[in-house]
Length: 259
Image (cartoon, rainbow, N blue to C red; front, side, top):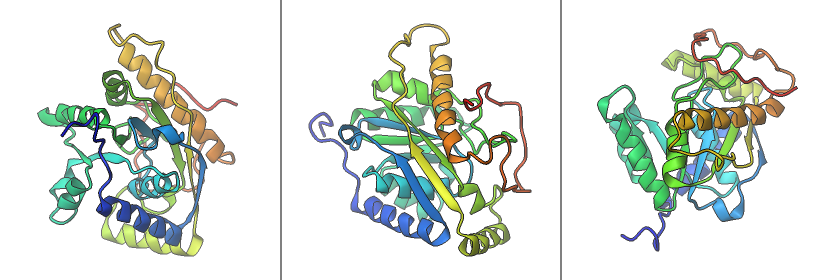
């Protein structure tokens, strides 16, 4: 297929899943979406770069993207694709498998680059994992998002989210999931998502040593700046403390929100 004339279109299965996600988030919390995705970018090519704070994030971002008329292809951990039922559904929906810690992990970036080249919107987490910063601010990112932006030339929109950590705990044991869901149904936490303005990377020369790191820092900085307005009463530490979540300062990002 000539992707330059026939851009990728989200399958009905994925569009239906987005509607279901909106219902699930509405059952467990109160979703507030701010910012926007320019109309000319909603069908790609586009990269959405989001912070990662909870196992519930994919559901929240799926619902938020639906609210903005975007059907992204998500870069997700390979474990989901190996699951008996979820795996085939993920593949059919066009999502991109990431086998972290393996020699084939680079194939995910190639697949994402091909997806963006075909006119898709790709959603990824630049941190590469659920962040473990004690204050739950974005960690120092991996360079995959920057390298994808350099390879494709697609704009990068930062997406900040806050509140999904109050629904599901870091360690998703069955008991923990059930407790989290029950608590969320009763308390209905506010879950906020903010789409920022595209990150300016045009001043960086991809061929210059360290360019991918500098671009990554700009992306993480932009996510951080968009996260700050979502947690104005939690500027340093999260109000909700998840005892199952470890703290790791090894990848703490130098940037903190602007005062």
